[in-house]
Image (cartoon, rainbow, N blue to C red; front, side, top):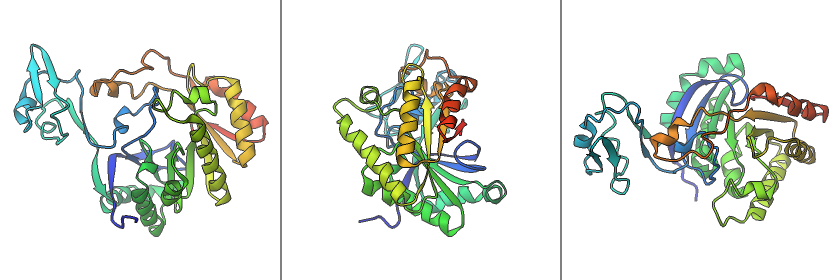
Length: 310
């Protein structure tokens, strides 16, 4: 049964976004993702619960956070400030006590009303630019009831909605979330099963995931949804014309009108350190947008609209 008053696990809400759909948009980042892509630019969006992050370059080891922690999960040994993750419940009590803003709480529950109050702050820009709201993540389709409730509210306020998703969820969950969404920004990282193995946890049935993805796209098209295919270009993974040829065949098969090519970047790399995670793509150079011209021309010559950067 659908929750009529769902709470969303929100990572952040960002204003004045220019590359997540048409016009100026307010981006609502939902927390939680079931993929494990090693190039992920938002590692703090993966866990479907609040997390404590520590920016070690800002920390002076003053010890104020140690005193503030009600669960005694923070401690200092020598010059090292450490966190007992088993004891930490991400209550956030230590965050405002840090005088250097070295501590950050990633994520928290918000109601549709709370999110709408933030969205309304940018409303003046929507009509002028043809923009609106983009719901992204993480994987927003892991919170289908919240997405549905939020998109319904936006529709009632005549605010355009876009969602960014990987598409790897069961159809009933996808349609619950997307029925009232205006535009779907659908990721396509690869259609090759060997490459897909890097995106999913070990033991995932990749053939099943590919069929799920293709089936979801087919049904979305049949339901008349506007789809923009978004293809991140990742060094050593899919930065070749074989992949682009597969994309073109897929787009023609499903009568999709537009493809966006997104250049891999390193903007989110610092977040891995704040979560004490290793970043597998740390030493991989960013892709320059002007290097994607050949791919774009191939797609355009195939009769498909294509933009770099979206």
